[in-house]
Image (tube, rainbow, N blue to C red; front, top):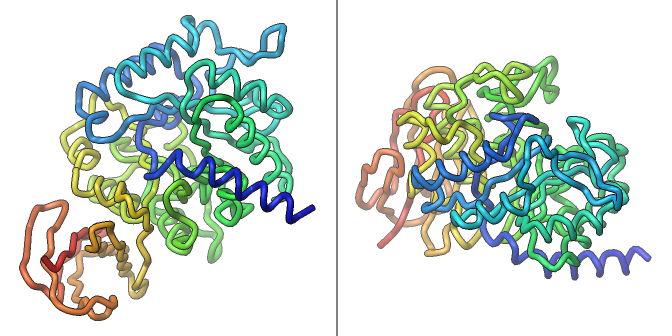
Length: 400
């Protein structure tokens, strides 16, 4: 029986793995709007993403998170809240699609969602077909109210993945059970295209810890990076480790990202999040007010060199080569045979870092491009950089 299940899982993955060849990019509504999201908000987001050039550089999803639901009709079809979404999801999807943007939606593998709205347990086939009929392109599937064991999670996620595969529409599937059941070891097999590796990220650099490995309150940027650093082998085209949303540009905004110690970050830390998410081939989900971004936020989110590292078609997650004395060094092979290199200073003071490329297994000399400053250097075999607190230097290395 186990062998049959395993074969079925592999077949499902082979069919679904083509849906997210690179990590999805777009806008996730939760951190800014929570469960108050409306049809007009989504239209405003779509208009802003086009106006400020986000769609043109690859941010081509809007993910509607929890709070859109209005229950079920007399045939048990899930319906949107008529006050929040008076035109319905189909009309909204048509509008978003007309802007060159795909639309994502949210549900949960239990009777109710995390915020207490109607969810999809026992209605998987019906809801998947409803989502397809609306023109939905992505489903984030949460796990509030579900049992703690891994086996039930695998069955519930596979059931929805199969339903999506049978819906008549290509719908990317995001598994969101917060990492406790190690979804990176089974998420692809049951039909997931990405899976959350930890709890909800908060707008802060790192968590306080009551004891080693036990965070006090919500996790921060560095905590997610450290968890993801050990999961390199599980990422690739169609199957991505998801360290959660970008908090870039939130600056301590009250709401979900501001809970549990989310006091906000500085622009150096936000730039580090962008750097590390891209090195780790993570989905990129903006959550700030895209209609009113300041120049620093826009610069961080729209740097084409760093985006190219995230979206590189080889689909390799960077390997952490060094993790010592408050320094982390990441190396990511790229599809053109070159490399992306990241140097992170986790300390609270500016420090100089010297490293030989030979230490990273790279022989010969490389030309370097600093993706954030544009600085280029020729024929380098040793690197030396002054790195600010919580900053990440990102270099593209080539031997041309």
